[in-house]
Image (tube, rainbow, N blue to C red):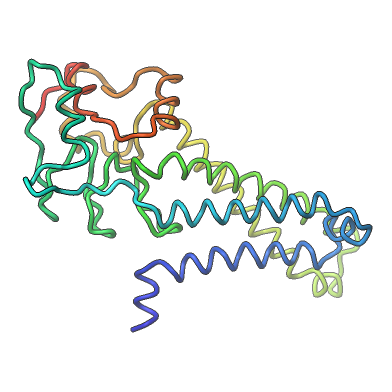
Length: 268
């Protein structure tokens, strides 16, 4: 029962991620890599930078994993509290009332681009996807931080890849060499796989952010009513620079209904 509770709470996955990062880092220092040789020579700058970068990556991971991704809440009147006044101020006077769809699972009124996550049992603003590795949804609040985490993690992985390669000398390959370097070789293979995944994720999410769309909207456009019925292909796209600026620097939740209606969409 305790294991199931820990798994559902995400602590098993978070512990596995932390343990994997710590284990691979330790392997790089215990084997004859450039990091170990620099420590032996007393040149501590790069090893300290490497450890600091790993620590920063871990902090970002837990921030993305534990923060509110953009849960849709209701106030006492049954309307969505944090965004109600912003929606009223941003919407055109020609649209005095805006009917929001009510979620069939948790019964809250969903703002546009929100979706119910059956894993988290919450409606998430600007829902992108539920990430099993961070055990949290990626939504409007934590999506920018998720991309920053991917970028930092990729730097760590590329650096670790170079360090692991520096400790592997395949010209000396033998059964004794394999036994002596099995942990480092396994770490190298894990780093390669993680690097490929990180590159693919970072490139795809930067592309989505530059277009002001989400994984859910990109993959399921034919199932989303507000995209099927819109006159333009992407009613939220305002150009790459403005999209990226608003994505990383807006610092607040956005009433997407206003932008949608200005682009010729029709509410259902």
